[in-house]
Length: 184
Image (cartoon, rainbow, N blue to C red):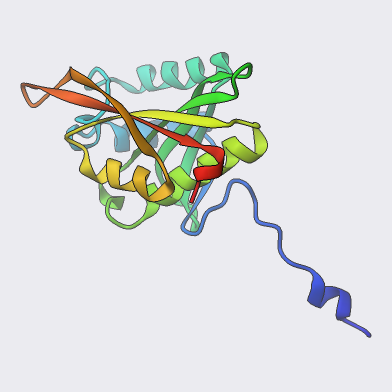
């Protein structure tokens, strides 16, 4: 039956593509835009970073990730607009684990891009890197991040009490983890 083979063909999704976003390598040419989007006090208030830094420090961060063997990705919309970055860091091949880091630029908050990026990078980690566990740390003052992580299947595993300072006061850091069979 002509065309029958085509009917049976199903598109195989890229491990780098979600429903709303696509992950790709961070290129050196991205660094000025990454720096511009990242060095916003609203973005960095929930991250352990010195603020602000120049593009040269952003370049140093990019190079360090490359040298460490971390998997660092630009997050872009399906239309190709750069909106943030995420990565799997501290990969331990012996125990099949890594730590997730992510940020999304403020104009793109509340649109599901962060949740989709978390799901996509975790799926990549589990299917392509053979990880069995991904962990992260999130400030208690970041309910948007905590909701995104929970939607993907992360569970709270503990707290580091008064571990960081946000807006002049100590805050707890929530330790969350996700096992491969828990990804939603």
